[in-house]
Amino acid sequence: MACSGPHASAFDREINRQAGMRIGVAGLGRMGAAMAARLQELGHDVVVWNRSPEKAKPLANAGATVASSPAELAGQVDAVMTILTDAGAIDTVYRGERGLLSADLAGKLVVDMSTVQPETEIRLAEDVRRTGAIFVECPVGGTVMPARTGKLLGLAGGEAADVERARPILDGLCRRLDHVGPVGAGASMKLAINLPLLVFYQALGEALTLCRHLGHDPKWLMEFFSDTSGGANVLKVRGPAIAEALSGGDPPPAFDIGSIRKDLRTMVAEAKTRGASLPLAERTLAVYDEAAEAGWDSRDGASLPSYWPGKA
Image 1 (cartoon, rainbow, N blue to C red):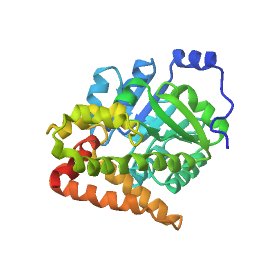
Image 2 (image 1 turned 90 degrees about the vertical axis):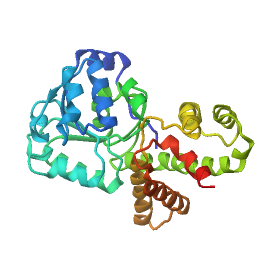
Image 3 (image 1 turned 45 degrees about the vertical axis):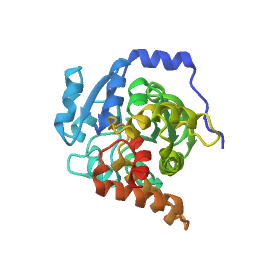
């Protein structure tokens, strides 16, 4: 399958972006808040909602409207974006009292950007479409800084025409946006691209266990590893944060260990639904669960390579 459907012209997309839309963002964790701020910067009129209202204050101070419920948010906007923790949060925000599905969504665009199992997105699409709305899933690769600067990797799932309708919004958030298949395909691809990264963090920690006694500067180590055949792309971006953690620091969380553990559990569960197993992911999850028990759950994922060497 080709990764991209027929594209609107760059000129048309730019005109749409300049004109601005009224967009609702439900879910203001680190990623949701960064994307909402990015949409404001692009000239969109943004309405936000979060279960914990205090997380909306910085966006409100920058001009966003704060809704009192998901339903109220949906009633004020042309398009709704959600980025939620897990299937339980999706169920609450969409299907709960004063949830999105209780609003009049007919003709509106709904984009869910959560990292969940494909079946969760498929069921959600069915419920949203029954209201007369258009549904696209678009989980993303990247952390807070790429979200804030429009450099995410978008993995869109849905009907080709629906993805094209969402493209003017998503192009402002993503450096690359690919239509990877029907609803559910985006979730599958997001789990797939995250798995090597999360296993790599543990593999790097084990590699460092073999050379930490040499006393090399962590910054030099990360630069050197990034230039080897086993180096991952993440070292080019997160190498300084990994070096900071190896030096005893605590880099600010962008993709915290609690979220990483959630993603690994989701991967393992999805493999089981397909009659398969993920032994590397399962063992990595066990190590990260151990790190969480040691108080690392809220630390950034870039700290993980420093956990295993520290056990020796």
